[in-house]
Length: 139
Image (tube, rainbow, N blue to C red; front, side, top):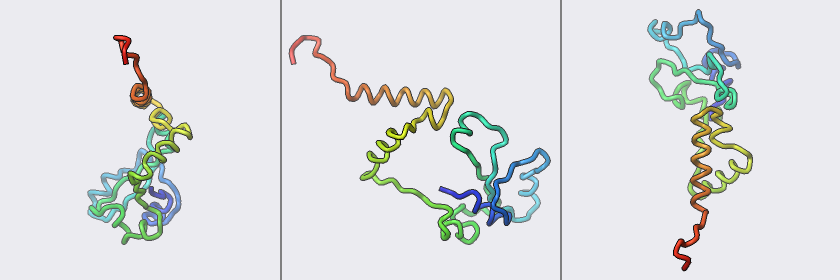
């Protein structure tokens, strides 16, 4: 998990998300030879999927450092960038919590791919718990 406002505070000195403009050329900044930090930007266009996810994107800088190492590791040190490990012991509880709160592939990805994944997952789960009568009539 990343706090995009804090990323931009370290990168540009402002707690704001950047809205890319048609006149800004990020590739030119890369090629200038100057150090360009990673930044958080709003998407250039919105889809239902992006809106459902409240999406903000990161554009990686040209330092070739991993994001957790960039800015001297301050994103991690300050708790603004954090990995969330889900162990096998809590996996089923986490999946149950997600389901109970109405979160599905389709709620996260409200497009045909998300609908297909949701239906496939639902049907697969239903079939794995179904019992079928023995056609011969004997058990």
